[in-house]
Length: 228
Image (cartoon, rainbow, N blue to C red):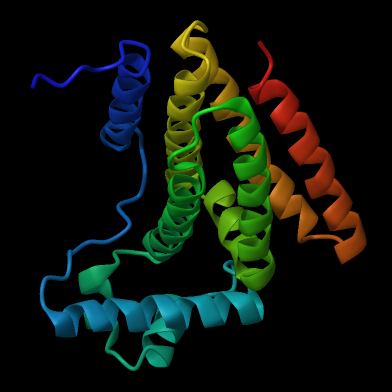
């Protein structure tokens, strides 16, 4: 049987694929110089990134030095540079790792959603889960600051927002097939970008104030996403 593809989904799907290619056209620092193939190399990269997380959490990304990172990862400075050409690449790799965690949350939370009521419930739960990730990993705020401070990393957040927007937009296209998919993905991209900013603000203040910001964001986001 020939598979029937919903024409309202296709523009969103294509948009998602287009944004996945944006890294090639954006001046983004390469997150890793040598892609590890062997288990030993993958474990070394994990050790480097875990050491970087610890140093950033302790002193901030500005204070982290490559020599200090090599020492804490228990590798030579030459080995470190084989995988990461500079500090920006380390921060970029950490940022992309957290961004992928966020995309996994979106995919898992919205899979199977087919109506507005289901979306409202699932999206609300998604925001709570995402907020929990930020609370559990306060180092994410400093890594984000590092991506904002380094021009070569600016494109990481842009691509992340567009990919997240495409994922949410695809779900909205199922729910609202009569609304232009470009409009849906535009709404979703803006909402997801503001969501990241909200989370970073929320973990920068006391918990009660942060909870209020997240609650208000959830209300405003749903009003925008589900507007007909």
